[in-house]
Amino acid sequence: MPEDDEQRTFIAIVCTDKGQHRRLRLTTARLLPSERGMSFALEHFAPPMRNAAPSSMVSRESYTFICPKCRRSPLIKAEAWWRLLEAWAEAGHDEFDISLLP
Image 1 (cartoon, rainbow, N blue to C red):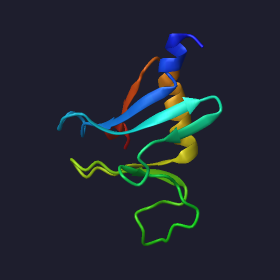
Image 2: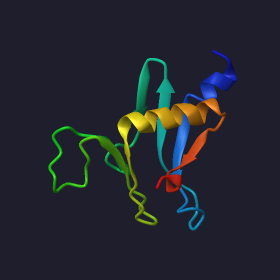
Image 3: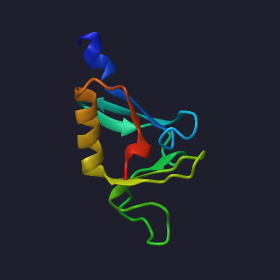
């Protein structure tokens, strides 16, 4: 696997609150052909959980990110998240700022 391809298989997920605070890494996404995933689950993000209680901060269908600096907590549906990251990696980026999410 060429070095450029290997670098694009890992994307740092950070928050800057749109440039309002220092860059804080929340997790690292893996976009390997055989594996998709992110480290530090339930520390700075929660994956979708089908059995999540409606009163919890965990979504049944979306990833929930939580920045401890600014308390920004965007949600994005799992399928859309992985499509976004794949496109981001294809464009040559190795970092994604979640504060760019609506």
